[in-house]
Length: 150
Image 1: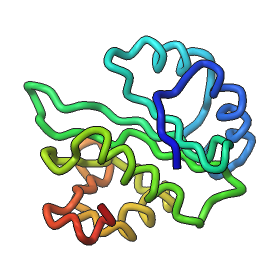
Image 2: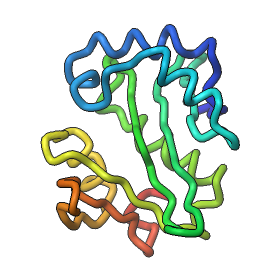
Image 3: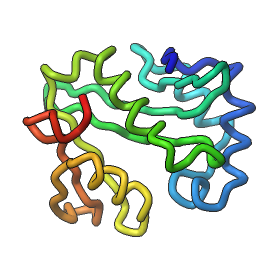
């Protein structure tokens, strides 16, 4: 898997994935505003993950700061026809290597109705708590990384 920062040229393919009801329902809608916000982030925080020369997954992160040192997986999208093949896990593992994940605490905030994301993080061995005050489940990457594949 090749992983690089998301680029404007990745957007048409990525946006086409949102014709899929499951993906659109979980992460949508997808629009030009999202693209411009992603491209303006500094440092960049959205990654394109390529498999055999084709865009296979897109992952976003938010880096921790002074108020909260935890880093957040903000979104994981796998091309709909490639779901269930482990690409989301491989993409996260690659991004964790790039970002030095072993030195960080990682969390993901997931809507209760997003069954796919709930199952994804549960399968990776992340601990679920909550819901928090906004009604989101909080998944924490375990300190013992052996259960998360990296």
